[in-house]
Image (tube, rainbow, N blue to C red; front, side):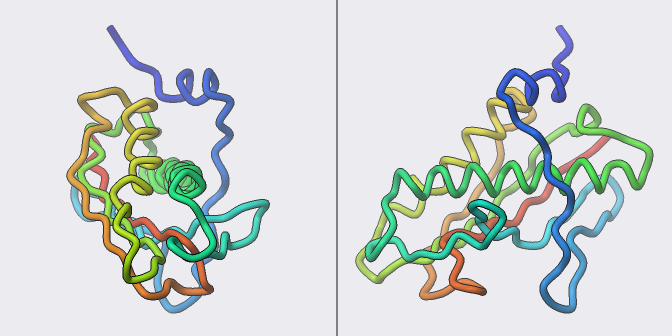
Length: 158
């Protein structure tokens, strides 16, 4: 049974965004062998950085949505990275790892639940085998531009 990632995205009504321009001196992704490393992607809402701090002015449920939107942004960057080597999303063999930074107060402890918004979407889009990944979720005092969530990703391709 073959799994077409683009068909799954269409069934979820997900349109992939273009790669965001870096905000400083770095590149959005780097390919090394069969691995693609992605710089942190910030949560965005209506095209602007989604500003907020968990435990202060944003809920865990809103955070799950923010992380899901970051995952969509990461998939857009993944699609763009793959096109530079003549491949597409169907050549992804594994979402290897996510690292999630959650802008939160010192007493907020649901970073892992916020990050599930991204993890669950990768599993849904790529399937259980390819989408399952290792993960870290950290609470941090601040993220660039006040974003509520930032996520990095490592993916493997055929």
